[in-house]
Length: 323
Image (tube, rainbow, N blue to C red; front, side, top):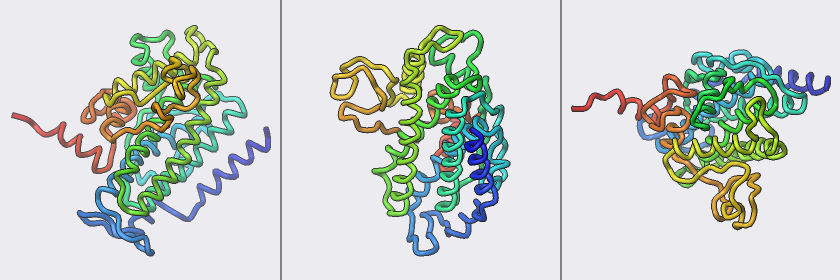
């Protein structure tokens, strides 16, 4: 246990004192209205690729802060302040009450997410960290909406292993489906390579979270008397409803006809009828993370909305008066 503790903070120190910075993105790329010319032999990335690569930075910031605070009790402002680029600190995250094993896993996820933010911002110009709400109240609202009535007492994502794993189920999978959706739209080798690398690790994180939850599928979440599996099913249904893009989300236990090859209720990995990953568009993702079901109505985890050209374009539409 002691070795895990020192390993985590040794890794944290490496990231904190890393010489690379978010400002390297400005030096690494020359941006114009049509795209970005990448310095150092990276070629040219068309504007559509830049937008698709920048958009998931919203989710990567969210995951980095949630995992950093959950495992270590502090976020990017202490770990890698240059990556935040002066953006506001998140609302309400805190150190979760976790077992040594789960804390170790979450700490590794946290450092991976710092790397993801760094990779995106060193490839495209990016944007400052947006305002994010990671408070108990924010997660409790998601869970209440999933069950379509308030849970009493309010769900606390930071209370214990089970609650934190359920809260983790809420976030990373959405970003994963976004990478799957972006992949066929990308044109440049640099963008394709980056998104493939991000998708690989995000998929691994999602698989680990689902396995940890699957082990506890029949465990009753205290004090609600509701199983872990039912929590995942309700959250997945909520995301399908908010995203309004059809069935793109499944919990841990499904009807046999919905399982792999139509032959199993166990659903440790979510996939379509061919067991291929589901995809989502940026619009669907915004509807989910805003909690509003509308890509132009911010709220939820992003009180002021997301950033980047794609997210901002919908916020501008919302602010444009109509006759």
